[in-house]
Length: 566
Image 1 (cartoon, one colour):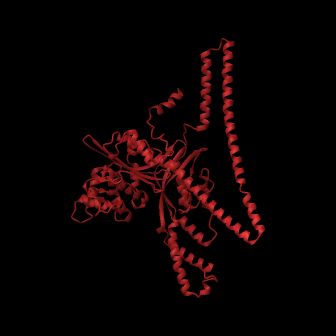
Image 2 (cartoon, helix red, strand yellow):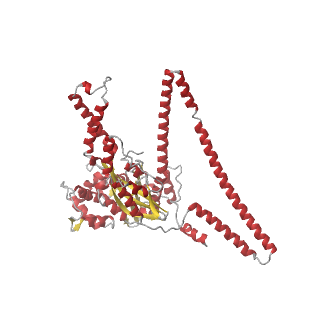
């Protein structure tokens, strides 16, 4: 009965997308499988996908204008939230008799068309060019859609039409500039939490805005979203009379998240491999150059270099040892299985003998005893392999995430590291030894700030909390520091004698170069806030030993390094 109960949900669930295999499949092949499953007419659908970390981009009917339904309320609200960000508008300001905060939530969370019309009428009055209010509003949102309002296809102004490319451009802009459009993503996260793209996909935090329109028997359904997978993505779907549109939409969301999650570790592994290969090549080139120099100097050094090179096969021996250890582990696992089978066979044999010799034992119950014993052993083995199936963790993972981030911001690394799972350090406590490095280190620490985004999603012994993290983008400062350094060096050259600036090889003296760089660095860091950026980061937490702890994502480690970590 326990086995039957556990299998019932699987028997009734439509888990095709969840069980889809991405191995060896491109994005086009994943979408093709979706189309084949639901017999989708490609002319009636528009798709878009963009990976915010890698720039990977794909489309179906990229430039085809299709009915967008209520998705238009995203760029419409971008107009007003940007004014809030610029200080031209406050959330409590009245528009058409309503506070803008009410119009924002009403049009995005509740998809209220009357509220949206109030906003586009208001926006339409911002331009005086003789066109209709609707035409003016569409002109204003054109930059968000990536088009020139004066040269765009006339179909853009004909009705509530957008293309997959335009919607991806719009949502990408929103995802990458959250401070520019305050409150909009949070409203999208609240909208229809269990429908459209979020009908079945509950593993990841998704901010979306759906569209639904019927014209007689014809159904137009669409959705646009930001999914905070390990590599956050933007994806869009338009449908124009597609059969089983709701199922197609739900599975598309699951497939896009699954496709991204499958490829992220492969990408990171490939990058690490390429980095290791590059380091190995550099090391080999350096070794070869050293060997040539040594050979030119004297024969003894050449022999030493050859001796070092002859030691390299030791790596193969070490690897061979690892393989032997792995084989030993496999043999031990096979031995355990054989022992279990032998014990089981012996148990059955004993029961059979008892049945023959003692009439007090009922054969049916004896067989059932064996069956239940085997089931208990099998379930025990599965329990060890799979871990706890039903768990009731205590404590608030969101509070732990907040305490962890607060500790990072305040520099209380002992507390922060005590909340880590599997990590003893993030390197934050290692201060540079030189003055310039210390300046950069302090500026990076002072730039840190964060904001919790949405609720904490808890799944048994795991939890996920989305945050928006602000930090100093160090690579973004490099060009300005270099330019200022060169300008300062020119001033030094003009104001000092040559012997106080150059060495005998006509190169800058080290102390002069250091002086110029230090001054340039100070000037750039006076306006460090100009180089601040922010990233959407998903904190992963795990429950063990009676408490929640944080598993830092690669994106967090990269942000804490100021975008310098690979």
